[in-house]
Length: 318
Image (tube, rainbow, N blue to C red; front, top):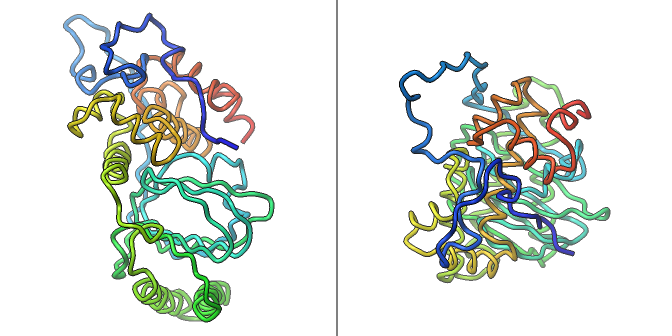
């Protein structure tokens, strides 16, 4: 089963696509999204746009949380499957089930007793079948613990380390649910022990393999994409910044995660649109502008193709 496939957004353009150079085939900026250069001051005599509500800023810190994996998909599977990052470290502990997980542009299978640590700001997404169980540990935004700087995918085969990790997570959850004085402080101490567990058991990089050139490029692309996906840049712009051709970048992404560079970009943008529609009351025109689209009409068509609903219908559905 292949997830995340979709038609390029450029097919929903308000205007015909410009001819592409051969090397840029499949990698040009999607029509209907602004480039950074196109976001400058308005031309003389142009009408001044009315003020729109500002996008709310995320809080500087958030608390530690332990959430069952089944609950993460509440509100739609897109919440776990689409490419995105969060601004706090995350540990996924799969105790049952199997599927695929993409971290930093690299896709691998996971199974029972797999622990996947994802540093803050790292793009990821994963499949979860009906038999997938486990917990997600959110370390909290503003976390100051000494944690791994790179993703880790640990296949924990020995019973001892499995029980130790499950016990640490249970202790964190027990404290958070106790309501006793100092519970959050106690949970953070257990979280520190969890960081030690990762240090002791996570001596290798993702999936136990040293990243090759393709994986390194995919990781650099997703890191750059995560920081600039709102800019309206297309794959050609990212490829230029990385010093490669769009064709090569797409080939590498297909090799490391089975998806094109363009699909990763579109998936990230539409995930953000879904989050803004479901968790804010910003006007659709403001969301389209914030995500680099040149018009709300184009944004609506692109969103409907990916989500199966118009932005308005998606928001009404909750």
